[in-house]
Picture 1 (cartoon, rainbow, N blue to C red):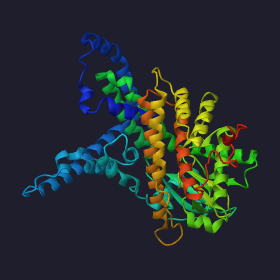
Picture 2 (picture 1 turned 180 degrees about the horizontal axis):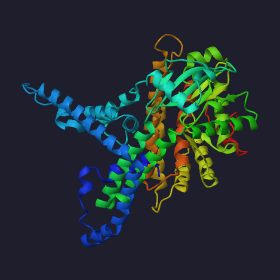
Picture 3 (picture 1 turned 90 degrees about the vertical axis):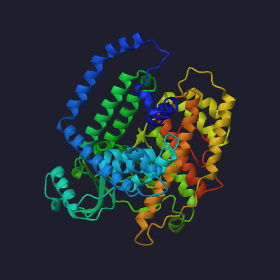
Picture 4 (picture 1 turned 180 degrees about the vertical axis):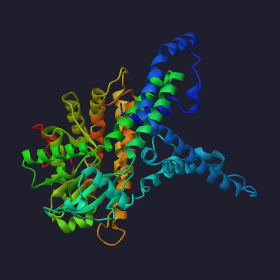
Length: 509
């Protein structure tokens, strides 16, 4: 069950935070006490294990947390004092104090990478969180200050174990990008003179993530102990999902494996003239440093630039779809984050797949239901789509197929309303990077709204989907967006040029 699914279920079931300390009157008190006694040793064991795993850094993060609360609390008191003599009264933001959207966002930013990532999650989940919080936390996408270059140099020397000038002819001190957990710099290899990018894990990020997420885990375990109702929607499971996802992002060796797996797929299937993933330079890559071939291109949402690079943007999209669909079956993993920042048209006309931090795998058990879903998605047969989702989801309820189909039709009708006329000026001035970043953020948010709506409605019928399907559905929504921009008259799942590598063409089913 996905993190977002559990959170929505939690939100629906327990609207108010007071539920965490309230026992259900419908249950027998003595039974609860007995369960508490039985579960206490396991709770203590989990707390001790998490505390040992966190180590001294836990105390440091606690101190930093207190300092952050004091800092933001001081800002709140200062702002509150300015309204003391106001006839308009105290604004709602100030009445809520540190739990208001503004001050909670400021607190998250002061707490660093873990909480910035959580802030991004809030901003991307409008069906879970109140609109005021979603709007305020959008700024977390932009809050990623760069680490000074001398610190980056120090990390590179420590990780690679030799002088940098013996590996790189130069490293650009100005980062190409700076995210919450990593920073990317351009460089050139000394021996081969190849242009590369170096992705460097920011200092202390892994320790901070472990300490913060262990604290959140302990809190969740205590909440579940105090109120067993929370076990039914797996509060701890939500935290474990978030923890696993975040910790995987900070292991660049896993990303390197994902990239090489995709490159082998392209080679084996004879697709190297159609698509490309960056080469990984293993001799200058580690768990915290990833050196990759530098690719040059434009996002698939930059229609002007695409028109200048290729005569037929529609065929560019067809190629991208065929390569990606092929990876669902022929590759061990598929790229599961094809937003506009990760899917480019390269200068040589090939499709570039970037950033393999998130990948998915389709199990044979799930594949049959997915094919039916894809067919119904193409033909807009929502009853067949509902049946496929029911087959794929695990539920003990009797689902009203027709009602479910009507709800799905309402959701997918909103695809027509998505803004597909965003043109990115990738190379037309000093603000080009900001334009690309802004487009990626808009792209991500719009897709998340639609994706979460599908999951929310499905879950209201008692359905729980495997993670691989959730990842697949989100990518289909991205590709649907690209289709409406680059080939508005094409049905990506019925077009005879689009092939899914299961010896079936969707349009012939």
